[in-house]
Image (cartoon, rainbow, N blue to C red; front, side, top):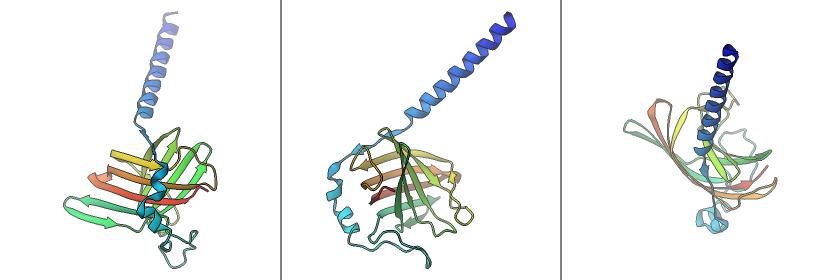
Length: 187
């Protein structure tokens, strides 16, 4: 009986640790801000008047108008790099909205994936060191995240308008700051 009680005690401690870990992870998610007026933002309006970016010659462009104007500033030591050639794709997978803001040319790319669910979100940094067509993510530590969307809930083929501000540190201590507007259809 003593051995069984000890095993049971250890099992309960493991379950409690997992539960606390899951609760802490859940608390690390940021909450979205809903602003239906974002569709009237000047930058959002300008996006509809600009052609979508073509990031490589053979790319088939899905949208006629530009889907994102996001600026990324990354810094290694005191050397800065600024990019503004991002596109946005959004898909709905079960109850999770996946917002991909990326500048991939199918050989390398840079950007983020924003996962939205239950009024919360978290950001995953895209790893640029990939094989052709591969998508993988790198470890990152978010310092500040803000996501504004025009609605809380979306269905396929809905229009989505948003603003992202993301500040974090990725592998190797590189500081990454992304901010800007996006608009597209939910697929």
